[in-house]
Image 1: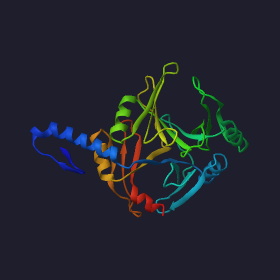
Image 2: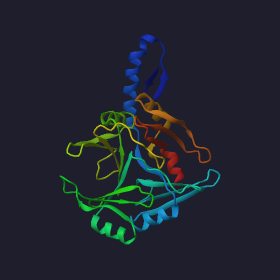
Image 3: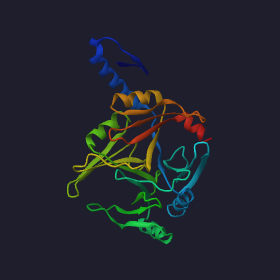
Image 4: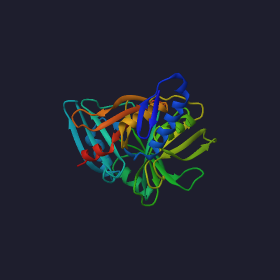
Length: 301
């Protein structure tokens, strides 16, 4: 068994202590997770033509290429794009694997949301550049919010949401889950996210939950979608993971374990760059990577 004493997680022995130890451990872990300095850093996915995708994101979506790194020994290249600096804003991390020009997006990944001041104008620009619009601008049913949907060169969907100026234009990552209440509990406890709101749409047979580390209009949120009766999705091999900042990857890994997550990479430094990370899966198998805040800041220097 594990027990939390202050900030230290220690082993507990003795069968008679088992039940009490579990309660103390979870209480201590919950307290620490809530105090941890966490922020959504970036979303990672694979593309078949890096230059083509960068051109689309910069010319059509108005993003900036923030940095690019090639790892020839591992045969891949990363490009980081967004609307502001990585030390304060959420960005996308594109991965190009040498020689792989196509991926299967699957049915589980939903979309990435972008807040824009004028959806119709943005859609006109995207059309002029040859982009694909899958839903024309217009209000959401039952709401005044104007949206549109587009696809990038690899088929990833982006939802354009009409909003005023915001510090986080890259505002959503939507994933589909098989048990919404289970997912909400996991992201609250293991990830320290807040349930911002939950909305049921019986007419269209789905329920959404918005979760994050701050209000929806000022920070990037995770949108979890449950479609009535669907408990499992094909995740494909295109979408990779979300990255989240943390003050301590070791304590984070323990908390994830305690609340039902699966650790797929034990906490520790990455070879070559020495950034400490840990990787895990949520109950639906969606991957997240927690990155040490200080190490991440050094990466950006």
